[in-house]
Image (cartoon, rainbow, N blue to C red; front, side, top):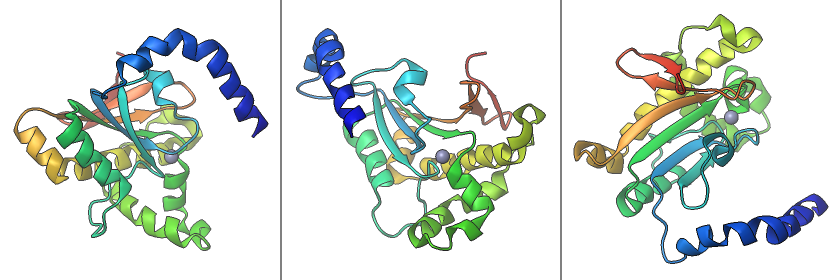
Length: 205
Ligand SMILES: [Zn+2]
């Protein structure tokens, strides 16, 4: 805990005073342009990798960047999507998976989930990834098989995202665009799924 308290002290002394206006401009309401759905993994730092700050990204995270499709119950992710689209009026929704994803490793080796009943149930939502597996890219090295499944999960969750009622409405009315990304934590590079070409292409050229 000490490290977090020290970090917060530094934030109060050095960071917040310089960014005070950023926060105060957002005092009455937020108007983020982007909904960002990603994994809980501590190595994925949206504001750092995209150069965004206060008020920019409306974020929902969970293990495996899942958008539950079949759940009868309300869940945090789909409720957040509904709010972002219908109330905040985000213009884009980005679904971002990442290399070396522990959730997708677990999907490949479900034996490790024997004592994790909730995780096991949650990861039933990523089964569609197997049907959308992407071609193995040798550039991914040792993790190439896993990476092809992770990219497949981005495609699968993108379909789930596009099936959310609020998203269907917003896309039909031309007020929302959705994107699927794969972030490589070892190179820092992002790929975007091209639906016409049905493959991932570098985001930054
Ligand atoms: Zn992950």
